[in-house]
Image 1 (tube, rainbow, N blue to C red):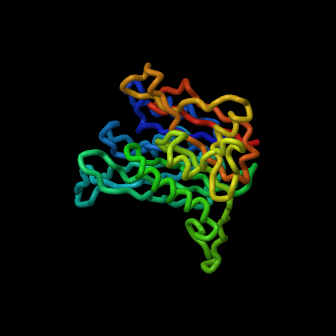
Image 2: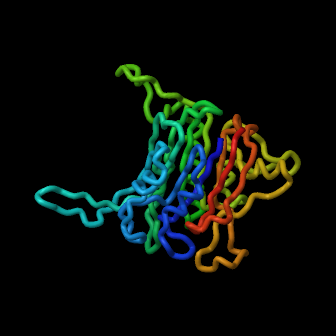
Image 3: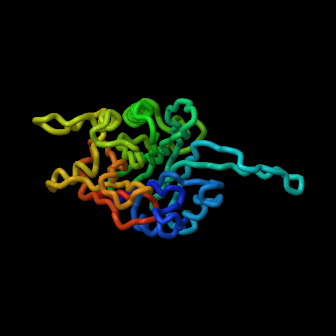
Length: 292
């Protein structure tokens, strides 16, 4: 089972061009796709409906979109009817198999002054996978400016991920109304743009810190860094996932800020992980990992 996460920067590549087709071609073939910075009516890409365009290019995938906010961009009356025009920005999950339930988790944030601070989110999608059974997949985008904000968001996210059995996800007790009860899986996969480095406090909130002697522990309230787990077995290191748009040739500025984190109970099923360094549809690179 192949999974991929890709921050698509509202469709704009390092060359400054909008090209949703080249983005989709880099994720086609995955069983589960997590996308970040998907937008509608965004002035920075000419107001494209990216959700519709992605669905048209991947017609055989089931999908959910989680906008983190709505901002009016010229709603108006036309022939006596109200036409809503909202700038929406958020995350998307696409799957080869149907999505049982989904919900959009709005991550904690604080008001900023003079610098952009968007409402961030984690889109949760419960998918009954052929290989692993029901799994919760999250398409995640954390704050890009303030480490303390990211740390609060990471802690909130892990509380949702590890406390799912108590909280119950999108709906519980559906049988009262005659509907099938949706699955309540313990297994989860967090995928996305976390805007953090491996030695940061916010990373430790999710995956902990390795012990100098015994390495990384697999315990119930921490996730496993998929790329790190695979590369450690191979004696290598994970690749970078982001290139500085203002200086794309300066390798000193390249970073690993996009991750896949998995529930410890399925970490042993990870077989490979790689970064598509040839992708040029965004300032980020697609991060792939596979279960087998």
